[in-house]
Amino acid sequence: MKRIYICFPEGKNKVFTLSYDDGKNADKRLVEIFNKHKIKATFHLNSGLLGTTDRVQEDEVEELYKGHEVAVHTFNHPTISRIPKEELVLQIFEDRKILEKIVGYPVRGMSYPNGSYTEEIVELLPHLGIEYSRVVGGHETYNIPENFLKWQSTCHHNQNALKHVKEFLSLNKTQYLYMFYIWGHSYEFDNDNNWDLIEEICERMSFKDDIWYATNIEIVDYLNATKNLKFNVERTQVINMSNIDIWLDIDGIKKKISSGINEI
Image (tube, rainbow, N blue to C red; front, side, top):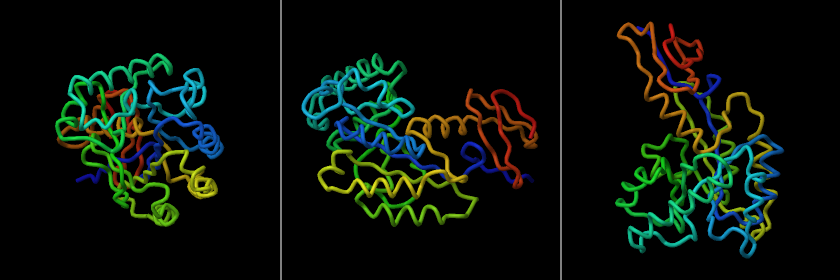
């Protein structure tokens, strides 16, 4: 019997992603650091607050975050567990609508403003076009989330991040998939005077052959596509139902599975 493992792109078994909230002007310096190191991130924006005090201007968004992901953080950052359901729908739809007009693609991800959510909100999000949402805090592991609508990071950048960098880089058991996810707010680097921290994180994490560098939505799309692979009983064929190339480890050999029927 064949041993078949799901891999990340190019047959890798590690992924690194980050997300930063609120769209403050400090994002400009942060994006510059990420781009220098070819690292991808997701930026959760409040479209109703763009251009207000110390925030990115609306006409800066498309170019600034090019190559990264722009995602929902609600229209004007309310504590959503305390607002009426009708207001929640408007907060998310209006944020999506404005951001989509700016960036030119469907905006499908989110982070909970003030870390606020309820199980009722979680159940509602897929009906509003939201496919994942990040919570606050960090579990300090490298596990794949069971529920992307309650996606918790590995750590905040001030939460032992360099220790986690060292641990993550040392992981070498290829029978597992590992995810390292850092979150925060770019203005915190100004407040804490520790821009050297994110510089060091990116310097140490970048340009590694065994790591896939991805935005939040790229991870969600890829892993959802792997769940829709259809194998025959003898494991000699697999149908990739998506238009995303999927990678498998088949008895130790890495194989790209393109859209349609593939011999394996």
